[in-house]
Length: 388
Image (cartoon, rainbow, N blue to C red; front, side, top):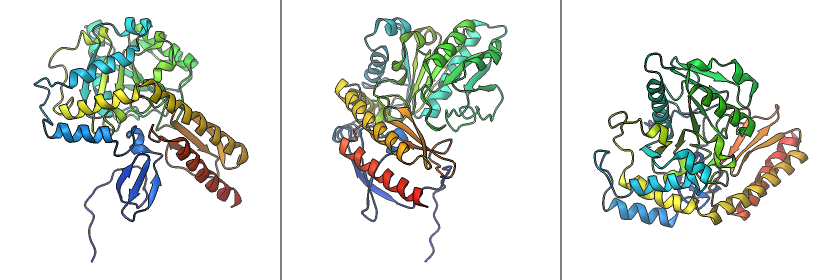
């Protein structure tokens, strides 16, 4: 008997037909009991893998106590989680502590898109405070960027007016921007959806200097590349404190699969955001922030980040070797940590990320043995494609 499927899928590409029912660590199992090594982790979300015992225990315990309050009331975990984020971004570094200031704040929401929308709104208000009579209103983003799928966060396409674009990693092109009109700049220190491209230190430094020259707000979108993904707690920590952002947006792995987003506000902006300027019904719930606190404790552990670095070096080594062995199929490897892009040559096709690139974002707890296993699969596929 024919059965109409009621789920409306809005994904940009047709996925595999598998229906996954459960997982453990870096392994997924489908309804037919086939096992798969997860090199996507829910699009860089399940940093601690599937069915992590501490995450499961925390969800079970908190769900039996209090799930939701709204932002009308304080809860015991939101402040704890916010403090951990601020402690993490300052990193006991004098330069970073001075930059973010004692009055740095965190706004919790429910997703990366919401986090970016909030950051854009905060930047607009900052511009209005700086120049009430004639505030700058435009935002600058960069080619191959991805900041969400709403009308505003996706406006770098653009969908609504007020957004301009400049080439990513092109310092000279920044001089072509009319900076008098720019109230905020949003940039991924490591692009994900656009093809896995790291920003150069020179580019981020130039963007920071341009923002400072006109008082524009600099937003780093670390929704995909932050929270341990690059073997540091935050991706921009690979750069010196002098090119830190004014606003930092986070989401994906923060609660290991529970919906949550966050904006970290430098003190110079936080002091200007007043009650009622922005809000959220579900953001900062006791359940999400308690789980996020557990996740942060795990990811911020230096031993955990050292593990990410170790398996990352192995993965890059194996993939670069495959590029040398199969140059007609594989073009290059890009990325940092465990956000990796394997770009294929023109004769091969990939739809996982921009510019014909296979994006890899496995759980951060993936083992050395699992990385070796995955690279053997890549080798088999590359060898078969090379023989055709």
